[in-house]
Image (cartoon, rainbow, N blue to C red):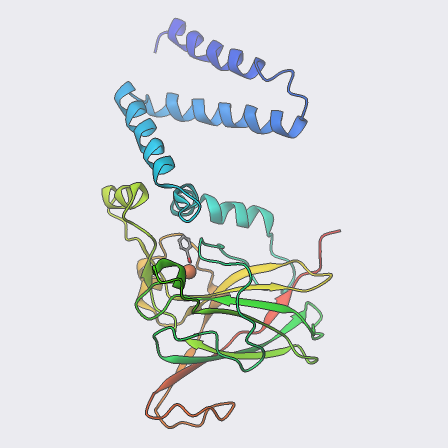
Length: 293
Ligand code: BEZ
Ligand code: FE
């Protein structure tokens, strides 16, 4: 590159940065300046062509067009680029022995059914019955009673209730930990499933030869007064997708749990009669970090 060309490119960055000089909000100023610096590094480093710039604009336009109040393709894009998990990493630095956080995903719904301890969040969702139990404790090991435990999951066909058109409520619910911090509930055995991939993000994954499939998981959001709200999942030990890779980079080793298969007729923890159905069981002991001061 000639010195003159180098100067043109550097001058443009300086001009754009200077345009933010009067931004009253210092955080907005910092973010805009950093964004411009990194964006220009990307353009200069790759020597982005005008055709590629146009293609990128078309892609982002398509991401916008498919987004509505039910489908958020921008979040999906952030997820597959690892930007969601990086934001989670930056904001949830490991705190002593507290349970690790992972991606929230688009399928949480406010006001899930209350199922109570021992209840069934399946609500008719298809799948092998699965008993999940554990405790909610602080980092010193003391039980946290009354913690709100929100749970949601896909059915055995890999779909959340909100992905069906019949307004069913299934595979989601909430309960509260008992006086001893303990909880237990029925759900269905988690299965690996693809993120929505019929839009521009799916086309991008195709173009880069990446699978849209997420490792099998069960979502949790756990909140209690005085503690940081924990958004996480548990993953299924032995799930082949753990080796292949999770499409949104959500897996953390500490969140991979054993789901023990139980033969039909094996006595259930609460005496529930499952007839000739096999079932599974897992344990998830949750540790909440104290609220940030
Ligand atoms: C999910 O786990 O539900 C999910 C997370 C990120 C993108 C799509 C789905
Ligand atoms: Fe999910």
